[in-house]
Length: 150
Image 1 (cartoon, rainbow, N blue to C red):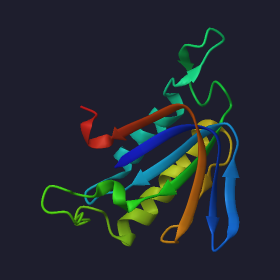
Image 2 (cartoon, rainbow, N blue to C red):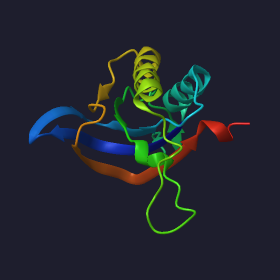
Image 3 (cartoon, rainbow, N blue to C red):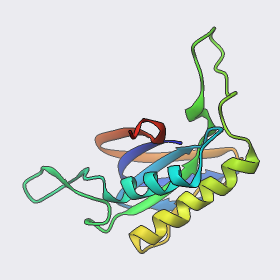
Image 4 (cartoon, one colour):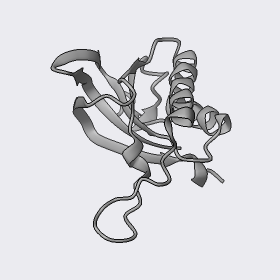
């Protein structure tokens, strides 16, 4: 699994011109599930997301986690994170997981992160044409791949 974390002042998802979900200060998380991903990938990424120290302390040093600042989270499924651009100019999504694997692992990630944060995680809608807006704070953007954890 791959995730892209963006520290945000606010973020929102619109579907068909209507607000679907939104958050204030926290993290916008783009979630890409690949073939072969497992619940172990979800557990590791959810724990890493909750504990990653990318929020400033009183001295302005990135020393606080999403849990520490009681921030919000918005997780949006994004299969394009698994694009391969090795050949040609058209990305290949052959490594992106199909719905039968991607939906349960995305939902599990959201559930597990919610448990770790003690608050609900806002979501997008799997497979929908979404308009995602955000105010990146910093900017701080971090890519984490569960296959690179060891």
